[in-house]
Each structure stands twice: as C-alpha cells, then as structure tokens.
Image (tube, rainbow over all chains, first blue to last red; front, top):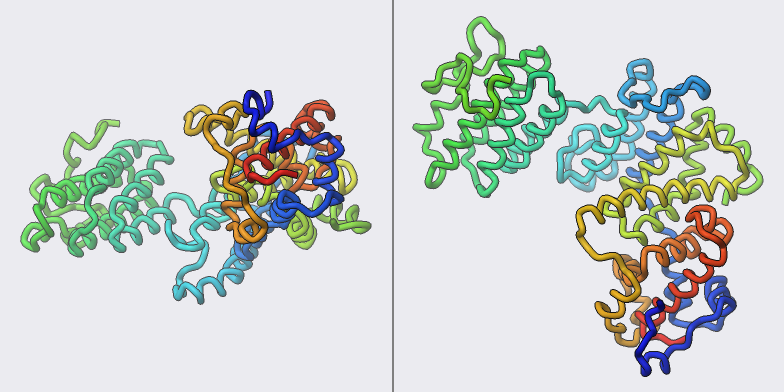
Length: 283
Length: 183
C-alpha cells in the first residue's frame, strides 16, 4: 500500500512516521528539519495582486446584492440580470479602473484598463472574470472590439477566433457568421505576418460587423463574416504579402448607399447574399 | 483570523457591505490561493474568484462561527478542485499520483539541503506535492495551507478522522522520501 514495499535499502533509510511524529512535524514541535522547513514554506500564504483582489471583492459584493432574497430563490438565477444595478456596477467598474491605474502606468497603456483589455493584456483576465459573472457589460460588442484590436496588432487568427466565439454564443441566426469566422481563423493560423492592407480590411469589416450587430441585422452580419472568410482565403493564397492591386478589391467600397453599415465588398461576388459556402449558409 | 468582530463582519457581508467582503477576502484569499495552487489548479486566480462568488451567492444560507466559515470556504474551494480533477481525468492528461505509480515514476530526489530548499521557487515548492496521491494532497493541503484540524478535514473530505490521519502520515512519508531527507 505505501511506497516502501519491496525495497530494502529504502526501508533502511526511512522509517514510517507514527501519528505522533506526523503531528509533531505538522504543529512545529518536532526538531528542526528540512521537511519542517518545507512545510513552513508551503504554509506561508500566497499573496493576491491588488487588481485581482479588487475585482474579486467587487464581484462578491455585487453577487450578494444581485442575489434574490432567500426563500424565493431560483437556483437557476441568471447572473446577467444587471440592469437594476447599473449604478452599483458603474461603481465597481470605477474601482477596478482605479486599481488598474498603477498597472496601466507600468505597462504604458493609458487604454489598458480592465474593461477594454484584449487577450494578452495584463488586465484581460480581470475583464474576462468580470464579464463571466456579468458585472461588465462585455458581451458580443466588446469582444468584437477586442477582436478588432487583436487583428490590427497582427494577431489575426486570434482576433477572428475571438469574434467567431463571441458571435457563436448568440445563436439566433448567427451560425453562418460564426462558422465563417472560425474558418477564417483556421485559414490564417499559420500566418505569422499579414500585410497591413489586409489587416486594415479585416478590422474595417469587424467594425462594420459590430455596427450590424448593434442593429441586429442578422443577414448582413452573416454576409460580412463571409467577406472576412473570403478575404482571409485570398490572403493565405498570396505567396507573400498581398500586393496592393488585389487588396483594393477588398476595401469596403465606401459606405453603402442607402443601407447604413452593410458591408458591400467591392469584389465580384457582389453585395447580395454572399456566397453559399459559408459553412451552413442557409441557417 | 478576524477574531471577536467576526459576527459583525459576517452580518455586514450578508447585507452586501463591501468592507466586510474585503475583510473576509483579505483574511482568506491568500490561503485559498495557496490551496488551489497546491492542488495544481490550472487557473488558480480565476478559481479563487469563483470560490468567493459562490460564497457570496450562498452567504445568506450560512450559519456558524469563524471556524465554521473557514471550513465552508475551503469546502467550496475543494469542490472547485474536484470539478477540475474530474474534467482532467476525462481528458486523461496525466495519471493520478497513486502510490505505486509514484514508486515507478519518481526516483527519490537527490538529498536537498536547507539552502536548496530555501531557493525553491513557488512553482517548485508546489511541484513536490505532485508526487502525492490526490487523497494525500487533499489532506496535507487542508492541514498545512488551510490550517484545518483533523475533524474539520474529515468533514470536508467526507472521511473518517482515522482515515485522514493515516493519509496525513503517509503523505508526509512520501514527501520525506521525495526530498530524500530522513526525519
């Protein structure tokens, strides 16, 4: 049963502890030993960094205030009900931002505050945590903003994946968009460098998609996502960096007449309906 | 320890007072984080946040003194560890640290003198615990890092106190052997 079976030399070196000896080691009354020192190291408490602590305390406080009164508790209570507590949450955001100031100063990013942090930013984990518990109005819009920022930083695959995940969680008719973005992310996975022109095109498409999301233009979102997919396919088919002549076809052809933010890419598939192979197009 | 003022802190925490949650968090978060790290949690800070969220959600149902509260905190933390362990075992990432596997897989470390011990990084401090079985690690982490007593641990782990004592003893034996340091 123990780890000492069948090894004579080991048994000679070690004798099994009695309960009394074990207790003495654990309560520190045994003679000083390396094991005792090791346990003391283990015992010394971890410290939690101030930003994380502030976020956790704020989240816990918020959770109490958001929780339904005992007695009429639905165990399936949804965290994302937060409208009534807008002002309280604003206070939480303010606190986390305040705690972020020092960190932001260190990292040099005035904009590096929790609620707008992208993956890889020091505060992203705090942001993600707060979003997960529903204390920041994160949601799809914000994650698309993060995605846009990642793409513009040349983390194209990560950005598109993030956008796909964000949209994929919505479900209501956005399946094609999620699938197209996921395909796009996979397509560019092996690309470490992409031309600035492509990145600009993709960030513009993500910007347009965000606006379309706001207006719940489901079909347009799906179309724009398909444009993203086509753009990335074209990009990876380029032997090196995309020459300017091809990239011009992908620049959004100004703001579309009449229909606000619909992304009407200037390529020859036209702006209608997108192509049919966008991963489950007729959803 | 918060001490004599604990009851009023608890009342205020139930009412959603931020100062009270701050007091509870600052009293316990370091140990909970240490416990989660010792148990090899993948995202210990996130799990720490989860623990305090769950405490906050259920604080209205808690009744008891400070010792009971601490036990509850580590019970919640332990349940998060169990959840993660289940997910991992489904993925079969690593074999669990059964004693016999340990025998085969991990030869005793070279004798570690005290200087070497004091130079251990945080990660390597916890890495010695990887050689323990899950049950041994549960007991020793709760005993050493959380400062729980044998009866408290028995309640959290749903074991008899005698079984907890035996796991504690065998866990220490394993650690000594891993360190190559006789008593």
